[in-house]
Image 1 (cartoon, helix red, strand yellow):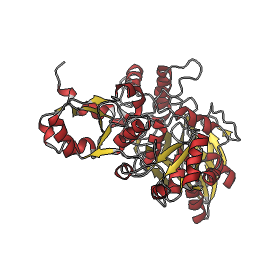
Image 2 (cartoon, rainbow, N blue to C red):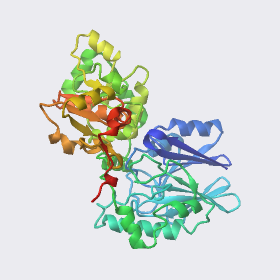
Image 3 (cartoon, rainbow, N blue to C red):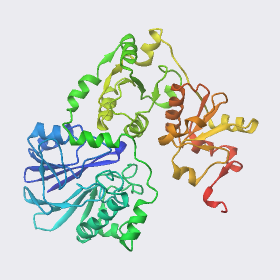
Length: 470
């Protein structure tokens, strides 16, 4: 028996390859099918099942394409209603895979079709459980994403989740290994560990949700402090229920090299948004006007999903040479299939063609500290709520990047707007968005909060809200 966790850091997502006696099951695959097919081929094995724990909201699955290319059977748990051919398993159903058995455990709560898959080894002993978004390491799945189904409330779903965990998962032996669909950084939970697997027994000891003294306490703790999900989540769910286009088709369209004149024409005729994926400090020195900068070397796909609400919005790409395929692939992972191509020759070709180039002011933390002492500056902190709560500049305004559209009216049209995050990645996203909307008085602080803390402002200008008297 072979189990491999295939973890994708930028999405904090775990897919799984399970093999026994020449037969393979893939659990929660990403859009690109190559890694799974190549693994099976290298081991002279056949992919028999593609098991889905639920209809994913944070990424587009490769289940349909993988099944079409391998002849594998797509399996969902009870209550699933896909528009494509799939086996809807019953609770407790057993699937044979070589010398092992995979038992279907219906665990509604995160969604009503959510299902865990219990792997029983050659000796009939429970070995591991693939929990999807039902149970994470350090957390459980958020119960708010499926509340539009009928009359279900978030509290109703949390109650279902409690029952699922206590009736189906927690009675299993402590030595069973828990393999979840996500880890720290995913928006599918609020308190996930950086560890990507653990024993069930240890989770019973340390996971706050599993330690809840009652169902009522569980519901209260699990529903407390849940932030609104990214706007693209419902669109990904809809895509995962349908006949998803092959990634091969998406790439054929998205990997077209566009000369500057063609690139400009697509922007004008299609209303395409220019997505620049270069590093922030490279972007600032010259970019196509009205571009949005979301660097590829970061949490690229989730931030695209947060900043561009409609997955169908036409896009054109500016990127570093050689990264075109990676950009289109990572966009497709979260459903952004409507890419019309990339700028051939990059920004250098754009400049050589005599096209207009814009720039964005970015200053060091040291320069920011000097300016802070000389005048009262308007400063915006675009980090997450938890980061702000831990410590922030006393004079700063809070405008978390994920919800920056709610704060647009707070930015000045006349005075400089100084923007920082933790390290400079998110602040350049925010600055480029504001610039594209006509705020030409934006100043990004390179290095962010961590760099600011190294200046002499650290002794005078910081506040930790948790230490303040009420």
